[in-house]
Amino acid sequence: MNKLSFKLGMFIFIFMIIVEAILFFFLYKSLADNRIEEVMDNLLSRGNSHRDVLEKRFDESTLNHVALMESEAKTIVVITDYEKSVLAKSEPVNESLDSMIHSNISEITHKGLILHDEWKENKYVATVSPIRIDGNVEGFVYMFANTAIIKGVIKELSNQFMLAGIITLFLTVFAIFILSHFITRPLVRMKLATEELMKGNMKVSLGYKRSDELGQLSNSIVILAGDLERLKEERKEFLASISHELRTPITYIKGYANIASREKISDQEREKYLRILKEESEHLTLLIKNLFELAKMDQNQFVIYKENVYICEIIQKVKEKMTPIFKDKQISFELKCEPDLQVAVDSERFHQVLINLIDNAINHSGELSKVRLHVEQSKPGLITISISDDGNGIPKEELPFIFERLYRVDKSRSRSLGGSGLGLSIVKEIIEKHGGQVHAESNLEKGTTISIELQEDG
Image (cartoon, helix red, strand yellow):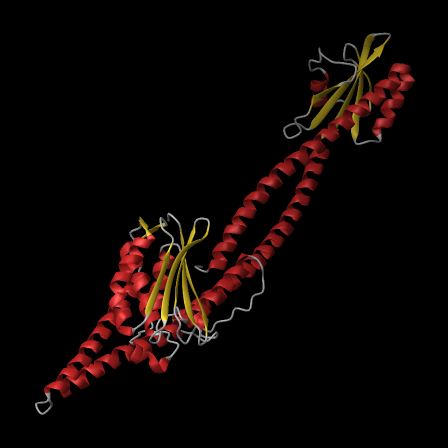
């Protein structure tokens, strides 16, 4: 009883029964009224027809002829004079007919009058047609019909409606069964598919090729299953990579700490090992910091505080901070920035982006090479910041993946370069939260260019 198909079927069934009952009621009432009206109109028309004959020849032979004609019919005719004395009749006049004949008919036109039409309570219905000769009413033609005729018509109509109602009810139940099954079967299969997803089975196939809402929902579930499968694999790879990234510096720290703690090593060797420990500790600290940054982004706890700033001022501060590193690496730095360009950014976060990208450019550039940072208004309302190096470049097939987490192009050099594979993914997240875009271009042996596009004035 708790099944959706049963509830849906019952709801549709009750709704359809109510609608059909209302329609049947009004249709039945309309048809019944029309049939009764038709009987009464025919009765009045028959009386008017007799009246027309009598108006042409109002004598005993014509009266008897009319009475004789009506005696073979199911109706009764009674012809009276102006004083309502019976002149001719097709059947004997009983008390019921006599009371109707002597009822008040003071207002009557030549078209006749329906005298009695209460067919449910009375045995007869009656009409009266006045006989006018030379402008004077000489008598009346009364027509009577037994109400059994009308009751028979209504009973026949009721039987027809009963049969139609039973057929309609059967068709309604059958249609509701098919409809509810048609609607709920895909939903049941989708329910089973979601249960499989909850169990961890991401390979579900519903096999629907419909273009309606159920088909779209089915396709969405299949797409969701594929996305969950992909996320599951990415999660496994991410955890494996993080484990590796954490294990490596910890192993270095543990190993060199044991060596540095030995008593039989020289001060020079001890200083060397301590320097390595410091580098690995800094690498581990940076890795953990980046992981926290990504976790905040994933949980929507990464807040951006935008303010309108001159972009060149931020870049100038970054240049001053990075100058010692450029001198130490013997790399020249070229800065071109159009003055008076303003953007709405979080200064601290954007400073982090620039440091990250310039540090990447330095790590992938050799001695006596050049790193270039250019800022310009590429289009009206659009500012482009590009950072280029003269490094080895990135293979074309690797380029689409460099902004993914823990992805490194040159796995063999990752330790020596100190990268964790998280920097560019953090850059992408920060820029996108600013409403901007970041993309990369690279040519092997010629270098790489990372470009950032931001809206001017936010």
